[in-house]
Length: 307
Ligand code: 0CJ
Ligand code: F3S
Image (cartoon, rainbow, N blue to C red):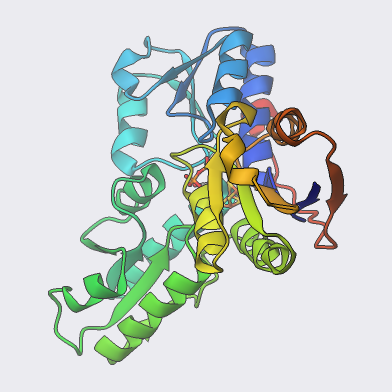
């Protein structure tokens, strides 16, 4: 069997930075350090950091006063920030700078007097954070159908911002619907969708020209990983999101000669290796190659507290 690895795939600069913040905080301040929410959506990453002394909580009420507390890459609302201040926590913010940029942009649009529309998925922590970083009403839309349901007159000056990990194509369609519905629309085209999301989605499209089946390494709760699997499916390839090698079903590979393999922005390389090992156990010899593709060199500065 041939396996073609997507390029680029796996960790983005925001994930690398967020994990490094936890590791450095543990070294600098000693264990435990508390992390609000999974630092990135991957159980293997979380469990490794737990072994190093990190403690993951969903609510700051579970953190003792004064403790070092890290906010996850997905960002938090102002209410959560204020809760941290009230509890006297020593907060280190691992929010991806590209998420913070969306927060700033959303506030700016609101100050300009525009009705702010957030394109994103209800209930996702990044969406909860972004909604809670923009004072005043934020209208959430997750689909073209949601645009029709917006309770705003057609001449309302509106502006949109987006979740960073959406499907580039779905977002384009929603923006087009906004432009049709409203006469005055401001927004950054699809540029809030981060570079890593865009690059991984573009690579999967090219990969699927050659692969008969697509495997995406990533967690079920990882938005960007789910979007990669959907692209494979849209292109008519059987496509599976797998947490690690143990999730592979031998039946998927019957009669398949070429598999495409990619990984979400929160999935470590070890899990890609684990999937390759599992494939070898199922089909025997596997020939691995890497598609030609972008080499990313994005790096973000660390917060001063751990630099
Ligand atoms: O929201 C982000 C800043 C992306 C973080 C990296 O990926 P992951 O899987 O933790 O988060 P998503 O569910 O947002 O893709
Ligand atoms: Fe940031 Fe994009 Fe990664 S928003 S955390 S660079 S997936």
